[in-house]
Image (cartoon, rainbow, N blue to C red; front, side, top):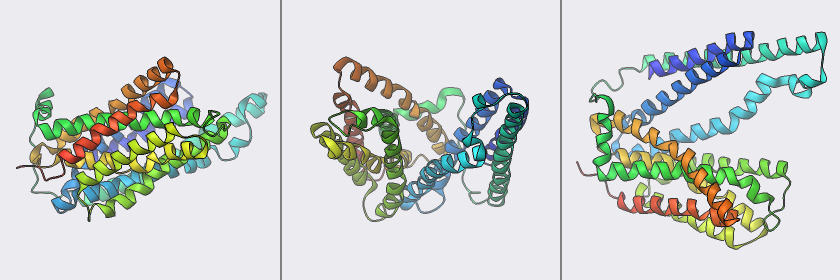
Length: 338
């Protein structure tokens, strides 16, 4: 974990020479290093959170932790744009020339440097905290797997089913998120201009944040598997309401699916990973690979929209994904066998 945070730190620092030299390839390299750190943090942090406490409350802890992930995706784009752009947002480069353009470029570079330098300092604090608590799980051991050997976990029915559901969940979530603006712009839905529809998409992603805080508490009272099945069924119901109605009801019922999505990733992850023991890190890595469903299913949903000429009918594909997730919730409602 400490190494992953350090990699994030290095990725942030690489934006400084990239910005000062204005070299596109350096920006790509810095982004690659930063993204690699994010992936490693995800792979390590999820099973770590599951282990830090009683097994029966692992689902609740992971959902609570993921709520801060959603909080970050809600707050930091706004804070980051204000921090990095600042007064630059009031003018564009094509409005300037000569010395004014040079000054704009320098200010632009300094804004990026200061922004990522601030993040790098914050990551140093996080790295220090990780180092201080490095021995919290001294008794835990990871069983090393060679090459692709870790994928043998997919032979376990519960884990394999869970990994499939992560693929489907991310695909369904991204598909709906990608279609929302076009969907809300339709005359029979809300007939909104593009900019207004784009602003409403925050309700979809914000719903995921709120739902995770609520869900983390609910899972201390309700079986995680049953709750997963309920929210997946709720997502299907909202899709059916949306495509069978018009106006605000149609639009807001689709936006409300974000609330249903809230607990899905952490709950599927923790249910699939139950009883993996020393193979928890391998399982986490495989599940994080399964998120490439977010690249596959949106393409299929878009193709279905093109073939049928209807965004509403295309939403039946995400609905099918949610149906399989609901089945997994019912299947995994009882604790995994040893």
